[in-house]
Length: 232
Image (tube, rainbow, N blue to C red; front, side, top):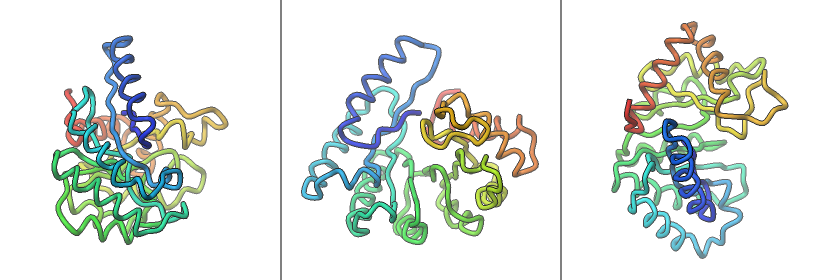
């Protein structure tokens, strides 16, 4: 899945995904569209309403391969007022409720605020992308039917926090991702991260949970298909 995280990239992303589906028809290229909180510093706050309207129009047009809304979320380390981030995220929440699409949620240094927002109203089951929270927060995140996804951080030497969190996630809420081109797995550095490195994440999660690699692969594949409504 390829998420579009800023308005200027949406059209190119959808076009690229369509081209890739023609070039490699046996490979499934899925997309998501949203406004990443780390992009907000580059956007004029006066244009937030117009940008969110454009996002709604894009999502409602239901382009082929679109399976989620995002990335979107909260990041209290980017220097954007929290009130603005919350307002933009609430607009994504409303769009998810209107369309039934899951959200790809980014949360960094903002877990208390994110949990509070998630508890306000029910949402379609969504995905906490590249989870950075604690094991103790896992039940609170999952109680709304949401899933938790692990990325390259779990492969790092001494990565205790994501390892403990991975152990705390119920099997039916567990996902993995590469987050490429970011978060290259430890054993692949300094190479650029690639989707093909997903097995590294699966191995790290399997080790954390003391489960066979094959079980983690099968479980996370089934969960992704269910949450994103992908064909088998």
